[in-house]
Length: 154
Length: 367
Image 1 (cartoon, rainbow over the protein chains, first blue to last red):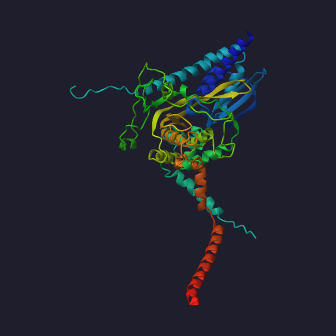
Image 2: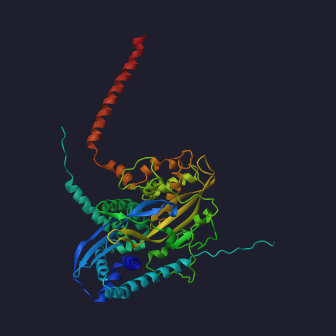
Image 3: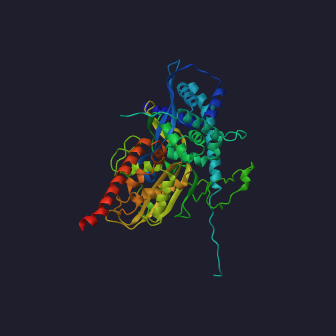
């Protein structure tokens, strides 16, 4: 029982961090500003920019290989209540990394977790889904519909 | 004795100031913004990211602006920048089967699951210059088509069901090679070859791929599939104890399917070459897959008869930062080297003349 509840928390945190990292810094900052809070925090690490080596798989699903690197920025913060939050996201947006780390730390308190989920994570996920759907529909319009032309008399 | 010669400081300073002026060009025109370059010259940014081997669109745009549009110079700038950054880790391998597909075509199957989706392609354009782009006209919004979300299946999986095509590909050993950490050694495993090809010069790989089509190590290739789109990048984060998504990157993947008559090492089947490149870089991904297949010659028991099959030749010359560094260094001062050569040639000419004089006088001596 204990294990499954931990996994659940882990999954929720994992999903939240993933959604926050995938969002644009501007969108995130905008939603954060609407939340209207400004907790004091101490930077434990960063925000610092570095590289992550990117891996693909030969043939798409075979042995892994490195095919380049990407810039990433990470941060770790500690709030006054002692909660520690982590963040890591593609790109060089330090403010975004710090903000994600603060949200990660805040969300460890159940009440704040709900607020963050509904007021920040859910809108970001919805925006992402809408963008994906728009692109999917645009791509679908370029799908080839084959037809056969009958030539001659037989 | 070594005498250091100094000089040219003022000349260099003024040359760089002149460069900055020429880069900016006519001041009555607005300066390009990085966002404009990233949005409107996006394929140039893709090439700079791919060959600079760093995925960061804004940095690529900056490099292009700073290099006055010289893409190899921009690639050089990006490579130099990457050496200043620490490495945080290796990502979980990306899953191109889960790609948010923006384009997918196959030249081998007309009716494959998911269909042929052309996406934003230059294919089937007439390659006529469009004067209307010289003005700032409105551009139509793209057409959309709702309610069509068939899963975009891999073409290689289709052929695999019949056992006619080889598997995705494996390399011996657990370790995944990394040419940015370990000096290159030949023969090289396929994983490190693919890493070198992924950052290799598009023009060089294109020419080599073309050479295989023209008969220098013919493989009779078909595009099994090209897909372009966004994939998620995930990283195992030790302090969290799980993998998180860091965001998405756009990649182009090419599965080249090639005929193979069989050898002592493998039965007749379709073999494959693989290309994976940052951004929308279809030509590069295709060239990469042709080169990958040609470089698998010894693995498949083929005779090495052409340049494209020679790993040392291909991989050692594929990096345009190395290539441009070595070629372009020739223009830097070699005054002392040349002075020594001059002296050597003078001496050799003297000896040559002396030998000729001697030979001319020899017949008389013999008589």
